[in-house]
Length: 81
Image (cartoon, rainbow, N blue to C red):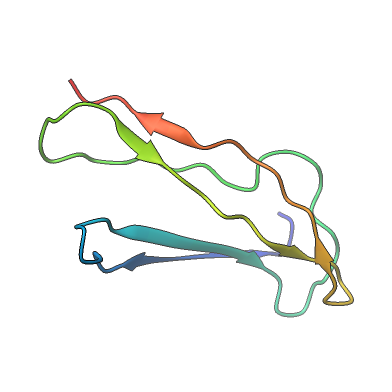
């Protein structure tokens, strides 16, 4: 393993009914940089049909010295029949 932990928390819906999930990857005692590539992947269970669901993200990262670093990714879509 990489000596890191993954935490996730479901966020409550806002006034528009949009909910979210916050995910973090960190090391309590290991500040070695993560290798290039995907940080994590996830699966969703959709309870009702209704067309595509847009997935947005706002990634943030920090160096071992707690300085901001760029993390890049692409928004996605869940296709619901």
